[in-house]
Image 1 (cartoon, rainbow, N blue to C red):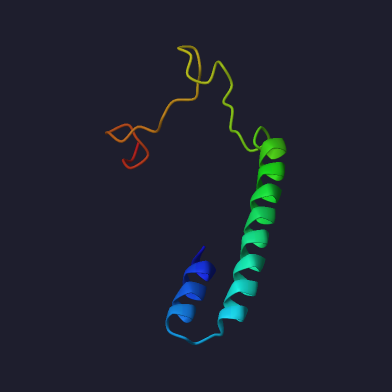
Image 2: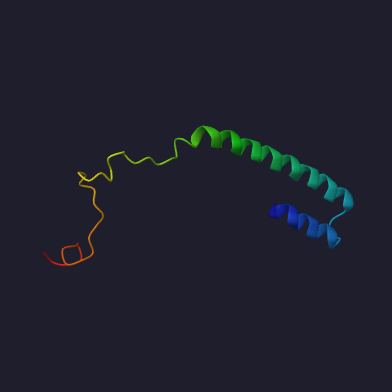
Length: 79
């Protein structure tokens, strides 16, 4: 989208010809559409792989997975 913005600025400042502007604009529209289509296709299949799941018993009362203590008995103080 940033490229599209700069393309419009260049056109408004008469830095490129109108025919060049139109051809580049059409190319950017097509590339943007293709990129979005590609990202959607890879996002659906890999979204489950990238999801972090903790075990169900991670925070159970009998679990040894406790957060670090920051008091007199924590890692910052000598035991």
